Length: 248
Image 1 (cartoon, rainbow, N blue to C red):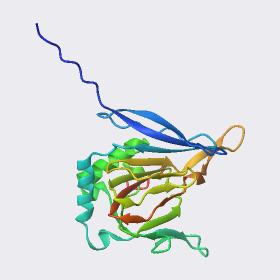
Image 2: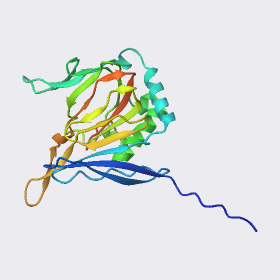
Image 3: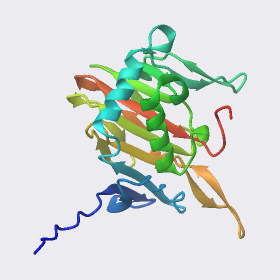
Image 4: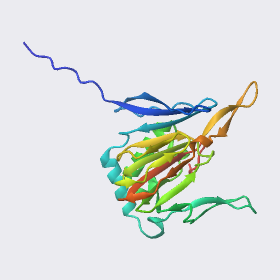
């Protein structure tokens, strides 16, 4: 008699949702089923309702070999295209125009930009994966920004801006001490393993009238990169816009 082997169940993806409601001092934590690992990641839910802020953590989002491939692509770049002193965005009071400047009081570390159509298949695969999580296409994503932080490096509290509908932060290489990403309003600090991603929406709905809603900047999602105390941290930031930001 032929013995039937038990059918293997498809591996599923799970995300942890951290939810904060205005006026509430405690954070609600929920486990969210993102679907089968073999399929494209389910998009994050629509922007939160008024008065609600959410952060999503997927611990096993990117395979280690993909993280290694992206790091290799970044390390192969040199000069002005490689890792260079990190910059912050500042707006001129005179012209109201934004520019990227080096400001050691706001940010210390190195940064490097990557895009899949220039920097190889691993970078392209990561872009597709991050866009799939947000339910967007690659044309809506800015270049990936890799940030490399050694002992003493940090990024002061900041907001990514309402023009960036979704922010994604992927750990390519964690440091051994310090370097957490902190969200002061939530009272949370994250220092996950390589391959983990944090994601959040930078705006939320606010009732503007009886028949429509508009989006407002969600200031609860102010965050910071805490000072690295030991080792080296490398993260990749993906920023998704509502419309196209890359040439078609």
